[in-house]
Amino acid sequence: MDKLTIAIDAMGCDLGPAAAVEGAAMAMKEFPGVEPVLFGHEDVLREEVKKFGEMKIIHAATVIEPSESPTLAFRRKKDSSIVMGLKYVKEGNASGFVSAGSTGALLTGATVIIGRKPGIERPALGTVLPSRTGYTLLMDCGANMDCKPSYLMQFGQMGSDYAKKCMGIENPRVGLINVGSEEEKGNSVVKEAYTLLKGAGINFIGNIEGREILSGDCDVAVCDGFTGNVLLKFTEGFAKSMMGMVKEELLSTTISKIGAFLAKGAFKRLKKRFDYREVGGAPFLGLNHIVIKAHGSSDALAIKNAIRQCVIYSQQ
Amino acid sequence: MDKLTIAIDAMGCDLGPAAAVEGAAMAMKEFPGVEPVLFGHEDVLREEVKKFGEMKIIHAATVIEPSESPTLAFRRKKDSSIVMGLKYVKEGNASGFVSAGSTGALLTGATVIIGRKPGIERPALGTVLPSRTGYTLLMDCGANMDCKPSYLMQFGQMGSDYAKKCMGIENPRVGLINVGSEEEKGNSVVKEAYTLLKGAGINFIGNIEGREILSGDCDVAVCDGFTGNVLLKFTEGFAKSMMGMVKEELLSTTISKIGAFLAKGAFKRLKKRFDYREVGGAPFLGLNHIVIKAHGSSDALAIKNAIRQCVIYSQQ
Image (cartoon, rainbow over all chains, first blue to last red; front, side):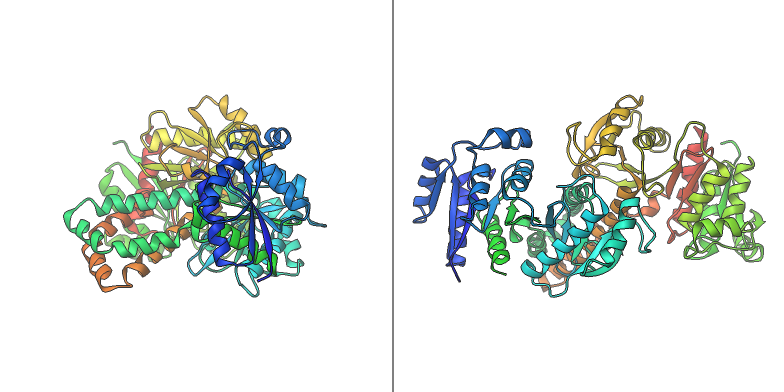
């Protein structure tokens, strides 16, 4: 593999800088050409890096907290790990950026600093969700609240491109999330988006209803960022709530308790299928370089996989 | 209990008229004052009614199929079970209407024939979903694709009223589905709806994110009909997909197979918690009389419970 530099916000994980540094070390081992550059507090990072050998560190004095206003923080904290990392990528020093920090600051910062690809109206945040048969990329998951039909068309194009490059799908099936399968269904935005998507030069399979999003019927599911964000968080909540109910019922009688004990391997495998860490992070697409938003609770494995996403995307 | 007449579309169930007739008979037994009036093909219904004793039948020569255009079918098929049943309610002969037939035709027909309550801008379809601790009423689930902020406010008010009357909740907590908890979050419609809901005279608890919809944190979750419909169908698909994955993993080794066998009581109880038949149907609110849209695949139990919803709502 050729040399590939990836900038990493080492201060964004809830678990602290250790997770980001270990993730970077894991990525170097898995992809020998990768050179991570860590952004964050120099003294803290140097201590962590020691455990794994050499890594380039660039000192960033501050951190943007998720509780801060993204626009204000991004403007004021020029010396934060997010702003400095994004500038480093913008200046051509790295191919991509990984951060588990403030989503708002990352999206605002990436759009302003790195800039949109020519022709792209709005960058969008994708999330890779486990489907019945593999994975579905949900686009947009929260970067754009009020969408024009042309944005949705471009979400389909960007999603298709990502699915080809990073999910290994040759001819990704792109569906438009809607309330029915017929072309005339939906609100005013999706009706027009339908027509645009038909002429978008991608494998547009038409409208998909809620139940088809994770059924394995499509590889890329397109919607506005409001719907996508509600769906994404609903998925998290619903999976948790269902697993809670399963647990409650399993523990309610002695026989089912024994049953649950014997079946615990199956539940472990199931949990792995829903483990976001295996996927990495959410790609923020439509910029001149790839930016990956890793989950706040990312551990080293999740960060390593987020770096992997940058590597695979950048090599295509 | 006082005498209470409920009109029933006896032709709407996928299982055929037998399910509707048996459901009506079950309701008569459970609520001695209830008098169902069945709309559908007289000869067919008379055969079914025979099994349970006496019931009033009004002949409706045609049925609106779910595949037909709702607006066209509703205008042309004046002799259909849906149109005749709705007219019967409109004329004051019955307190409510239950149908498992075409959703589109029922919503269009009910709005035009029965008419909106004074002051209500748009009627809305609610769905009662099992939450972590009880039930959540999701409003709107598909009647209104493009919503003004004032519609959302009224969905909150109508939902709160229904939750009080039919779900036995004294002071229902009404949440606005959004992408964050802060007031300034969301798209342009929900931002304005937030302000309106604060002054709506209900127990408005503010924005709720996707993960809180079924967490038990709110009793009524408000959104536009596009988002609600996608969420509702997503829930169906996701629950099915998750249960499919659970099954796959449980059957993948002999030990977990034994475990699953021992735990099958727990899975049965879980299935019951997700059984829409226990809830009845989706209330279509904001009209001068209550209309319940029962699931197309409703059996007798589901129809009985849909009639129960009309009974409880009408008695308050």
